[in-house]
Length: 434
Ligand code: URA
Ligand code: CA
Image 1 (cartoon, rainbow, N blue to C red):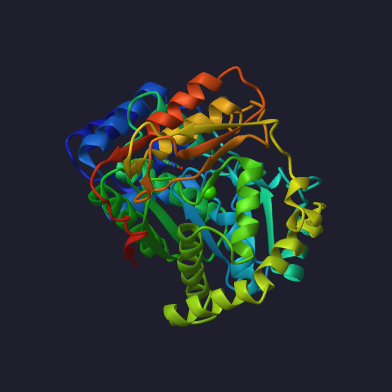
Image 2 (cartoon, rainbow, N blue to C red; image 1 turned 45 degrees about the vertical axis):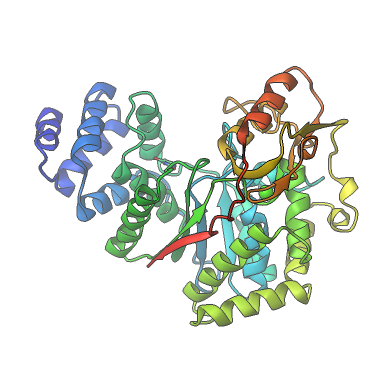
């Protein structure tokens, strides 16, 4: 077999079989096939696409290129949740305890943030003392005892995806639906869950800005799940503005606690109830979505979901006093307001720009090994459809290091679009793909 022939075949729009994909991907990981041939193949895929079987084959080859996590020491059906990347997306911090309170075991390995999107592990480390690197044994023990644990990824997960993603990033081949779908699903499959709930974002702050493209991505991932026998559902949800009101590590922890107390913003609360219900259903705890939603609302009202959060924090060495005393979380020295320069209605808040602004303040890292400031970030005050008067506060920046403050202020200001006509709120969920 030759890489040349495989590239040629894909260029001509033919389907590659599993042997050919194995030859190419495994050869690439083993440094036997050079970057330039794999980039040519990726570009051919970008233009010619891949069918469902081919996409599933690629997914499994990437999933099996490194460690495959075995979650069998955890009892019950393990359901994982994945978001295609949001800004201020605090859902994992809320969903994990919420699902656990409803009897769904949550054994989650999460990543750190890079660029304008935050990572769950960074957010958890804003909690004083919280340890995200437990041993495998402690991790499983905590899940079996408390129903949940969230730790950082360790080991060598999907090296093929790491290498291919880095290559796509510099060869203009990221935006290919089969390549994105297989990249995401390979990591989920290697992560060992029995079933997966996908939150596919759509809108100005998302990877896929058009609903039709987001739908294709969602369908591609659900199809992979079907092909490889992993129960998968996808929710297409709005990312035309940041979710909730907090962007930044400690700010998002505070927001998660508020939601778990039943006092959080409506959008993020509702999304967590919806995605949580999907998790409850896939876990086999309850087959009716409406009843699952009711159950989860009750878990918030009764305080059981908040208690699960407290259990997790304590079990992982964190200070659970932050729940009642959020001022124990890192706090920024200064607050700077961004005010509206006109009257009208908010029509969009570019979540991507808000994410960049948070990164400029130090909440996110620009390089893989960069430091982050847990305290800083952005508090959103006005959201889409809100009426504003000239001089009203749109957002508040929480600031320590001022070296990029001007740029951050400018990003936040320009992320807001304001119109004269009244505006309807966007739907939170556009479609559910099963
Ligand atoms: N996220 C991923 O993990 N992979 C992609 O290819 C795109 C987004
Ligand atoms: Ca948020």
